[in-house]
Image (cartoon, rainbow, N blue to C red):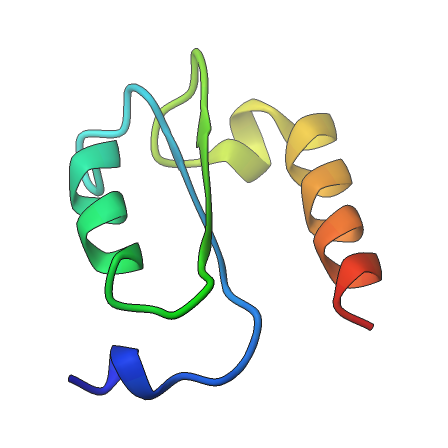
Length: 68
């Protein structure tokens, strides 16, 4: 219920090979957050900041720019 009350931009990211928070779980949580943006990173597990740092950083910077 609390997720549905969020009124700020939300970006949720996971890897397609994430076994801790698989894409299906992330999508289910995101469905409860109005306007949440979901990114599933290919060939990545639970740590996109470590496994795909350039993509992760660019995505974060783009998201921040979009919501300034």
